[in-house]
Figure 1 (cartoon, rainbow, N blue to C red):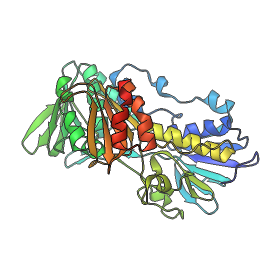
Figure 2 (cartoon, one colour):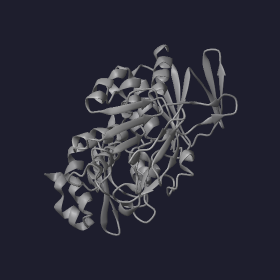
Figure 3 (cartoon, rainbow, N blue to C red):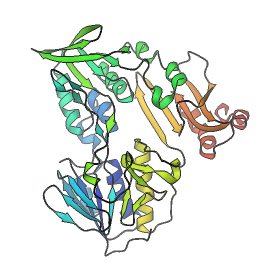
Length: 405
């Protein structure tokens, strides 16, 4: 993809981490042309991971999640178009149409649109509150701030986000009850065996986690909610759902792009000659295999932004990071995952015995290391990273044992 010059114009659609970091990266790597950042939300770019942690727990003020302010945007020459959604794209010409009727015709378009919270609809109350946006976080924090200590709050969904929210609610002196439909949380991303090693985390943190639960309805009453289950009910002062995410790609259906649960891109994050995609929306085929994969991870978004900025600004190229990285702080522990493991990969624990509260394990497929997962073992995980980067043979990785240094 040819480098851009000072007469070119880049429109970035999506004002989250990936979008803002791309704007910064373009300037850092020498692009002197026009940059426009389009965001559907009225807010300045902000960081999402703290919303379910520090913000919900009441430890951070909202200004601490900001990635930039108006002054910073002016300093680096980024035109902010806040509170307006992109509604159409012509990939051939690069024309972007906004909801207010504005038509932008840039040289290049970068799609950095993130995911939305998946709705959990109830027969009586409609969709439950979720936590994805800054407005969601403000509303939920205000709701729970008015509750007395010891009040019950139901979290529907026991995955990473649900566990993080429960941890933050407990830190406020509330009593979260986590309801998970599956027999065990986190089997999808971590596999059955590793997820089983985490079974006791909630109980160790004195947080109630119920698995195999079917939520039939949530009924609002005066000052309380009644959560009706297949085998009983729970009275709660607040209810919030964390049941996954979804992409809104409807506005791109006539764009001319290849859509397949995301925007299909090559190893250079190119979706079309004038269009790139990065972060949550990018399905990277040449790096991730025949069908490709999307990675809804903070670090992946940051890595994509740097790689695309370098390519478009004509800087020294930086290939996509070979090893995706993800972490979650929940129930007083830190879970970290490196690589591209599958749920059915072989798992070998290399640090910590069964039942230990700190451990490291390797994933392997056909004798080759595909990933590493750690519970509160950040140093050991980083020592194992070169093995994951290189796709080392499992027997050689076990013989080298860098985590023992």
